[in-house]
Amino acid sequence: MKKTRPLLFLILVFFGLTGFYQKQSTENLDDFKKYYDQFKVEGSFVLYDQRNDKFTFYNQSQFKEKYSPASTFKICNSLIGLETGVIKDENFVIPWDSVVRPNPKWNQNHDLKLAFKNSTVWYYKELARRVGKEKMKFWLEKAQYGNADTTGGLDLFWLKGGLRVTPEQQIDFLKRLRNNKLPFSKRTVDIVKKIMITKDTLDYVIRAKTGWSDEDKRIVGWYVGYVEKNNNVYYFANCIQSTDLENKDFARARIEITYRILSDLQVIPM
Image 1 (cartoon, rainbow, N blue to C red):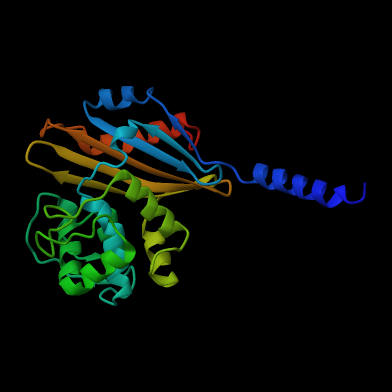
Image 2: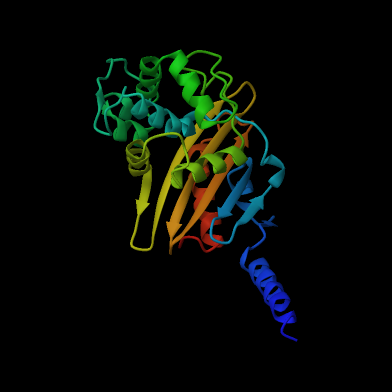
């Protein structure tokens, strides 16, 4: 009888551990189509619940589709600029070149935090030029960002060039950023996390970035980021597309669709 006790103990331990480690789960929801239809766009949405190791999808078929990252690349571009010493901190100013651009917010001197907030293209183009082609390529590959393709021009590759990223890769990059698993110093990562904050409430914090790329026959929009709430993290990537190049609601659709879905999933209040 005594000999069976060790075996019984091992069996209990095995089943206990099996129950402890949750299997990753996925859920596909079609209800969110109404939000994309409302703004007359196509698209997809993915949410990753870190605590429960769960993916929630709308239109999962786009999860591995490649798109230009557009201004969502500013997350990585900021990390590289800081890590290489091109930018000292979030207060580092690059003077405005006096070229008047369509977005009036861009027509002034910018520091890093303002350039990130305003998604100021000229600031990040200059940042990339100061980093240089070789260092930029080195850090893209080391950070495993998208396909790490810098063809198309040092200050254009994430807008009009060869850089591509999937919603799956966006989520993976955000997870590594949040969990300090990227090949950048803690100081660098902490600064970027700080400038990414878009909402900071008593109940939750959202860090995120928009993106918009113009292609030959369509426009592509992004809103990617993560929500920290109740000792959990929810990572999201919303990617929208439209063949209507004059869609006046396209810019706000990226964010509004995201917030409506996050509210429906009870991640944030509406």
